[in-house]
Image 1 (spheres, rainbow, N blue to C red):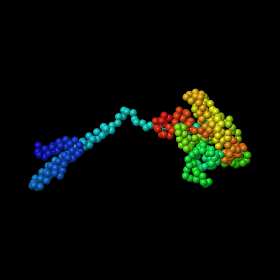
Image 2: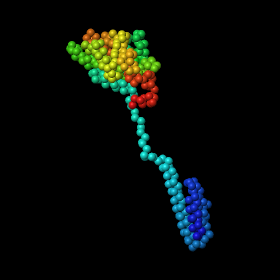
Image 3: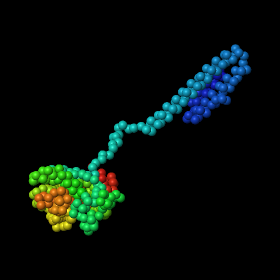
Image 4: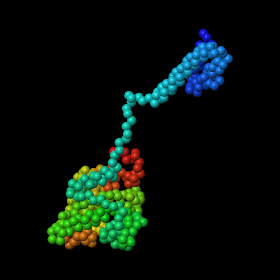
Length: 351
């Protein structure tokens, strides 16, 4: 074996012994670097005659190509080995079940709101929606609750740094009653010509579900909570209709006929007479306990007048209930704050 063949064999052995790219680059420098053995051979051509230089130079170029080819082959081998290690580390076991995204679901209070709307919708009630930032007139005055009246403290609310044309602060609505006022006034305006001719206005049947705000915070109260208020106004609407509507609603909502209602005299500025509505189950963990679930009453004549209607002709009832409390009763939840904590361990039970 000639010295050049021996050089190629030695280079291949050194390249094969390189365990990583850094070691391979060190071996390359030994043969192809500025002070490498092939470079030294090329420098030695200067001392040869022209004829010898031509022959020897051709031989050295062949050796250089063989060494470079061996270097390229080793680089590719190291790269392939690294790729195999990476692929093995990232390998997927296709025999295992796939990872699935968790399924979402409606919030329990949203479920209740939809249930309320569906039940009242089957009774012919429209659903009204409106602004959560209201004027003082809509939130209080129109509901027979004038300025500085002590009854306003029953709905102590939050105020916005903005005033209406009368210089009164806007507020976060303490109840959804303003939507009853807005809906009734729009309804009266729509049928004004009809009423001016002495004809009867079509009845008003509407519920107003939505978020409301008051300065409350404990296990059964929250600064932000949900409310659903309802209104039925016509020429011959009585407490009998109110009791019938509530009886059908609660028995349908809780899916049981083993449920009794009672009306307790109470006070609300916007109704007269007024009553709290209690229910009692005939079976189950709440058997025999009277639970307050709503407030109600015959709409006060002043409020009917603010609707744009004649209180001597039109009469009806209004009510308000808390979907949050109904949700607690339906699902056996004992702390209202759980609905607003955002704890997925709690919420996932209602999927």
